[in-house]
Image (cartoon, rainbow, N blue to C red; front, side, top):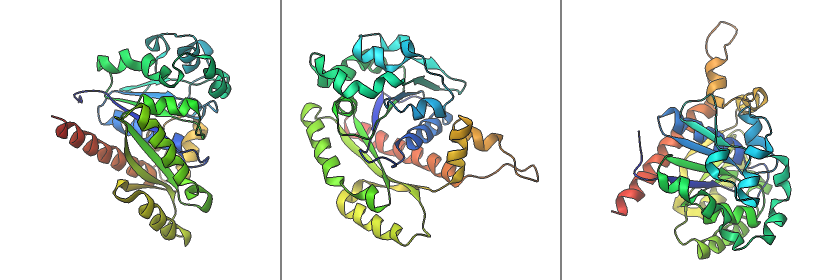
Amino acid sequence: MKLKKTTVITVGNHKGGSGKTSVTGGLGYALAETGYQVLLVDGCGQMNLTRSYGFNKEQEKSLFPVIMNGAPVEDCIQNGPHENLHFIIADDSMASLDTDMFILDQREGVIERSFRKVIESGTYDFVIFDTNPSLGLLNLNFMVASQEMLIPVELSPFGIDGMDNLFKFFVRAQKVNPDIRILGAVFNKVDYREKITREAMEVVHHFFGDVVLKTSIPTDVKVKEAQWDRVPLGVFVEQSKGKKGKQRQSRAKKEFVELAQEVLEIVKERDYQKR
């Protein structure tokens, strides 16, 4: 399968615990499993996406030298064991990038310029940036380089607080990159047993309106178990067996497949409208 051009997505929310990494990894794997070429980029100094896919820290192969030293993106792309899925890892030196980048010229567009060749080549159908929990210069760079922003939302009091600040940051990014749009807000770690869940959903729907996606990702212990084993959720589910030798099921994996399909529908519709 092939899209007409590369779609670049920032998965972002300045609230910690919203599940940016699990959404990035789950969506990326589901798209790759469907046959699309996907480049995942770990843009967070915590390196959670890097670790969850089983990569070890290699500073010379990370995103850091791309940003700070002008290293070619192509030299930092790693091929993992999963078909159609490629990776640029993070390392712990990235923890200070928000301040390190202030010495760079035209600093708000560093990532856009660095990735331009790879994006324009059409090698990948999707480039997906996992981001850190902040409203800083690094995340602004990811948004300037993207056409779409996907916002994972945890339905908790702290998870939905401060959405107006996130939206103001998005508007700031739009002034630099008028082409970026909100792909959608996706509910993550949803537990309908909790009374607050539906009330929080109403608040988010009121704030974001029609951009709230139909798909929501449920709470699923297998997400954490997969991260512990350092493999994608889809691989973990395929490899795991229950007591009677039957393959275990995962509600989250099923919904990540649905999320991938919903994202594809939106991207293809927007591409059609541009013709």
